Image 1 (cartoon, rainbow, N blue to C red):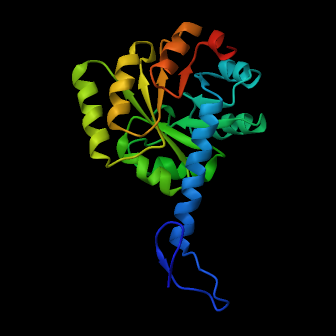
Image 2: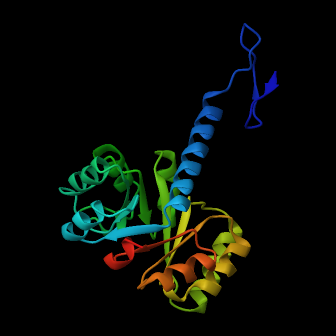
Image 3: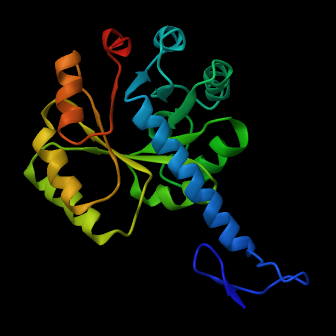
Length: 224
């Protein structure tokens, strides 16, 4: 009996080689996928968020590697994602914004997994994160910080560590430098700053504040 690389007990093979259980292999693959996604973000910290076909067309021609899809319906989302993947980019679908999906239930994730080539999902609903990760989808949990109470609730959730997305995104990104630092003190989940990012100064402020990337629909920022 030996310990595999994830600390699980496993039986040796007939040849005496250690055997990695299916569960351990699943965890390893999931960990590697998580690291690959985060590394991609860190290397490409400006994320294009698109809300229509015109914005998508522009983003596909820009030097951005990750695209957040903030529009579509159950008839068009497969085509939208296919265009992103054909351009060699990462496609993250905001399931809350896809018309026709029951985005409060896990079935919406099954639809995205089975009917699109999406790399992952974005949502404001923490109850969807675990199932998305089970499906092998990368996850972004989006928060709106409207007041100090909202920030306190985020800190409370981070300390509880019940739900662990790959990345969390805070909106609006332009006012979050101090807030990002506060969250980074209680959570190891990387942070993206989104919303109201208008220029290079806003980008630098967010990154210097502790975010690993920014997301924006502002096309002028995509080429920075």
